Image (cartoon, rainbow, N blue to C red; front, side, top):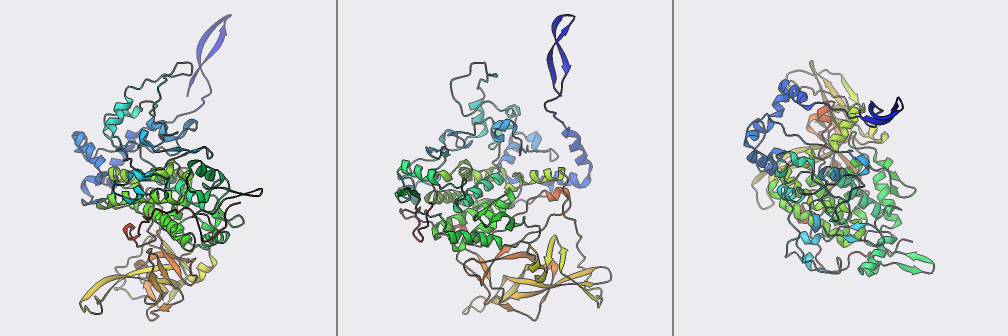
Length: 635
């Protein structure tokens, strides 16, 4: 509570007296040390708090920040702290901490995250273009992050009309940043004369008072959740040409004229009308309809995401009300499927690679040997997007993609640093209840007891954190819970010429027709009766790694039953290229009721089995931004 000084007359005299006034804001402080003591008082929690010393795997994979260079560096610089496994390392989550309308990152780091040098990692070396008509700043020229010999550096017409000879700068570490900010003179108050010298660092952050702060290479992490949402919004709004949101409208074309690039896309005046020739990302009306209809027809497993159909507004052919998790699911699963039969091949591949990249960096276990390849992939994707999208597409959030892998290398997996757990914990504070936990049946005793001859059948069943429906129930529901996959090992000849036997793992795709529950004396065993897709004629994988199935080709009818614990959840999305086929996407488990576990953000499986290197880069110096397969420009 604030103490307010007021003017008050006493016996005819005017004097200042401190009295209690109404508080403008109230700050509640919950002591953290007693909370830590209570954690160590519980045996299971105490074991988890020292997991990094006693329970972790030691290999080449990044599973936790303990595997990261930044964690190890603190251990080296402060050995007395690092040697005690019970010492805790905490992070400060600042999601929704946005006082006075400023950006949270700038408030805490004291870096100016607005203007020409908005990237806190590139700093003065941020490449920017002030767009006259768009009246915003574009952050482009990502070719400077490529190696010197990369062919993209020599291309002109494909990009901004110039070769790229500049080399990206090396990010500053904590000690170098501290040298820049330690002598900044701060003058408080509007009436005080302020320094004429401009500095992208507004002041020295109070966190530098901590003895270890300048030893950190990454002091403020980029939130991948918000980056992914903003990138998804840019892509969707530009593809569907949503009024007031698209990055490819009239002002964007006027900026192309001023920059003297992509003359084929310059505005044309036909009579009293203004015509924008179709760019490579301009969808025809039929393509927009296909885009929206494909998303409308998606039925996901229960607990997978919100109702996707509710996001589609068919009347205006646009998406509305996209939340962070909607964008996460779109980027990591649905978008590559939706665009399979629309857009030119080159831009379709670029967007697919972007989705694959986000899926790769969100993995909970990362191979450190592949991080350099992943970083090069991010740079290549941004360069390809520059080929196809206008400069106005590249706001600061799109640019930050180039730095995401660096933070994985230094700090560990993203899932422990993004804002999904924080936002979900806020829901707990608001009183939302999670799904009820259902214990698993004991499978060990199933062979020792004889089952009851009476069988109970179900239309839906929850087990192993999965929810299963029969196909009949699926057809009546807005979700899809009847698709399952079973992984099985089979022995066969290596080839027609090589008769050596080899063991391989194969996936069998099924649709649940009935659910049985067999009652034993002490437990119940659920069985799924399924139709199985013929693996010879009903399953194939295309050149981009999509697995497609023909659900009408049923085989292996002799053994229709499988045990529920053996299967993985998947669902099928109708292929927009051929309605006879369906794209297979992997499902995931529902949240449990334990509050701590419900905060976790489930890892989203990849929609494709194709690696980055299997997709060829376009290295021809030609114009890629124009579209020639239809003439439906924008009026």
